[in-house]
Structure formats: C-alpha cells, structure tokens
Image 1 (tube, helix red, strand yellow):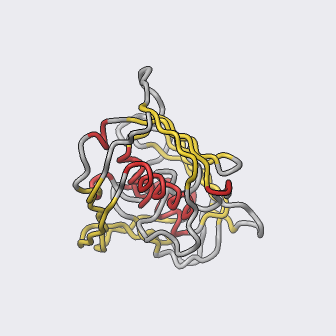
Image 2 (cartoon, one colour):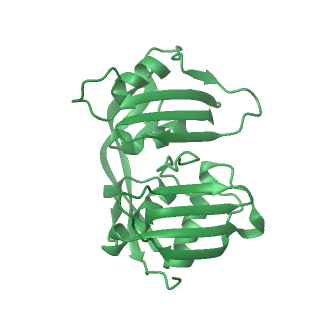
Image 3 (tube, one colour):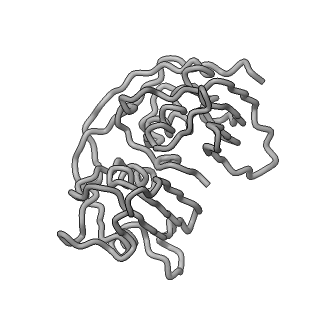
Length: 248
C-alpha cells in the first residue's frame, strides 16, 4: 500500500517542495533488487522516520518526488527506468513524515544524496483536466468534511479495480493523486477549502463486463466531482545528472 497522497504515485503535486524546514535522510542502504518474478513495487514510511522501498526504479522515485507523469521526465538514462532497487533509510533525528509534501522532500533528498540527482524545470502549454463540482454546492455521498484533528492519509490499491480511501485530504491533494490515473495533469477548481474524508472505487478497464464504474463516472456518483478538459501549464523535469549508486 502506498501512503501519503501522492505516494502514490503518488499521489503528489507538481508544485515546488514546500518551503518548510526540509526533512532529510540520514542512514541510507541501497541494493539492486533481486527479482523473483512479478514483484510488487512498494514505498512507505514507517514509525520512527523509517523509509522502506522495494522493487522501485529511480524513474518512479523522480515521478513521486515531483508528482509528474511518466512523459514529463526528460533526459534520464535508460537504467533509471529499467533497474530496480531496494532501499532502507531513516530521516535525520528520526523525524516523522506526516504530509505528502514531506514525503516529497524525503524522495528528493534520497535522489540527491544517493543518485547525484540534479535537474531543472521546464514549462509548456498542454491539455489538462480541471477538477470541478458536478453540481454547484453539492457533494457526493462518499465525500465528507473531516473531523478536526483527523490525520491525513491516502491509499490507492489495485490495478484493474482501483480503490482509493482518504482522510483529511484537501482538493489539491486529491487532484494530484488522480493525475496518473486520469492520464494528464489535474488541477483543483472545485472551490472547496478544508479537508475531506473520501472513498472511491473504479475500473481502469472500460471494455470489461463489470458493475464497476469508470473513473469519471465514479467521481461523479461517489464524490460529486467531474474532470473537465482545459488548457494549462504542464511542468517537465529535465535530468541534468543522475548516477548509479555505489552502495550495493
């Protein structure tokens, strides 16, 4: 299970890393992943600031760190997509990672410290989605305001049938988490502020005979939201330097 909005792949926005005291990694152990077949890729934060990553490419780490689509990462070497790694690390002073932005900071720290990652950003115009209310002022039955003090968490599981559950999720967080599944950048234009609890289930195979809804239909029925096509800024990350780790 991937935790924190954007783990998901991220789950996570393409905005710059939050301007707080960054959370960085201290002890890092990296090993080439020894495949046993169809090994699941997993990234999660554990108590005590522990990071556990398995069967994951550097390309995936970059995508998570910036909340990008696969085709918006430019000039990376071939091995970054093809080679998989197992990684264990802890944060400096065992700082707890509690938000999607902090998880992005951890991913970026890992890339910079262990893979010599350097980059620059580029922007272009392209097709995006606006996340909007289906009916003004009306929420769906599976989208409810969070109780005060609810801890933020977002999980998304499944391949053909995807189940998303979230607590204390903001609409920008939700938009970011939908990005890869929707196939393009999703921008929040709901006008909703605050945090929400939500549940969403949909099928990624619109040709299968199933009672499950496609993503647009599920968004409308469960959350009272829809994806509206629009033009917007698309951010690319161009890789200036990336090195294979010496730690094995």
